[in-house]
Figure 1: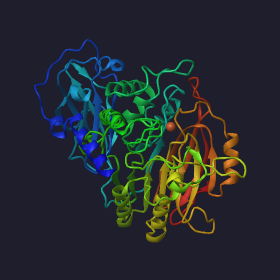
Figure 2: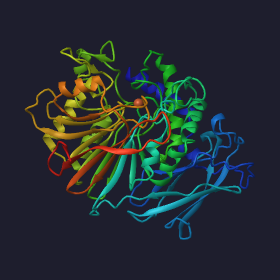
Figure 3: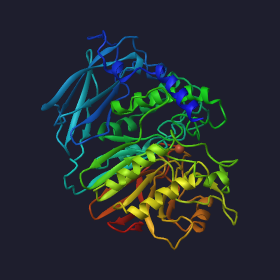
Figure 4: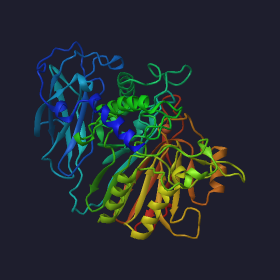
Length: 512
Ligand SMILES: [Fe+2]
């Protein structure tokens, strides 16, 4: 099976151009005249290091219909400055927006100062992009007082308005982590808050148009224009509940590999990712390391690409033989080793793990019967046990896992043995709610009430939309659960529903 998988994946390498082709300067249109601005999707930045950052834009005159650009490469100029008027430009250059990559632009600017705000802008022909703002990370050895960041996930366009992002744009942040379900693959449906353009996503053009529709939202554009992002995907960037090359409804793997390659290509195109993440067919390097001075090590994980198929006959199930199969894996052996090595060597005060799927063991069924979601770490119990045992043995400093996926807020204790409440807490879990997915919320759902009382590890749960804002210092990590009242109509205010604090050296969050 592994050989067949490797063959399938490598055979697909022809599907996307190589990194060399991508960044080679072709015969490009140097001074095109556009009827209107092609910068309809705004700008964004991401994957900061202490001396570099990725700047992104896309040229799209008709963003929801394939972009509406000539089938030619187009020259794009960029500049980056230390002031918001762009009067003190420190770097500038030219790059190519290629039709092979939907006229997207990824510039990896290097030679920047650490821990510094920058402003940037693109020019194509006679048109200027909006000005974006970004920030480099501190250098690895720097003592850093604090990191302010937010986590976001699950922004189903039809389920609601991005009011949460409107409020996030008012926050004082250094960074945003997007933990997946940036788009949803479902066809347009009537009688919802908004409507997807097109049908179920299958081809690269389908996925591109969907990213364009989401990215055309002004609140999402605003947040991208203000803060650098670290992004990782979940399932809906490809297809609901997929696992590796296994599609939910059982499509043949050859067919699904093509769809996954199309989805991964459009994901790379629209995200501020480095050259190291240029997809090779149905493979894309998404798990990656970041260091925020001595304060934080950040490991961004990929819990979709390398996992084995979900165990048991149904997604919500009592544990079955497959749940404890040691061959089952959430991260794949290579990523799992990478994460453990990284945590083992880490000198940082805090070890943040940005990923998709709740890790706590959560019985999701009210009453004595116990049922778990096999799509979460609960379906991959041996993978989770290995990681928690590792944390218990090696004791990396202050491990904190950050997840999305389930469209609710949760604070959970992660114990050395999730089945034994007498074992120590080895890590703290924060699960952030959705931006919009599942629509207007209430403080708690009935199922959630039952889950709180039936699961010892839960310290907090809430079923409203929003994001989690964090303030990390050497002494503590504070989490503020920011929630909106509704997403079905504009104008909801935002409030902090609850705040939790993890103190240095003491796993497990306490209400602040
Ligand atoms: Fe979701």
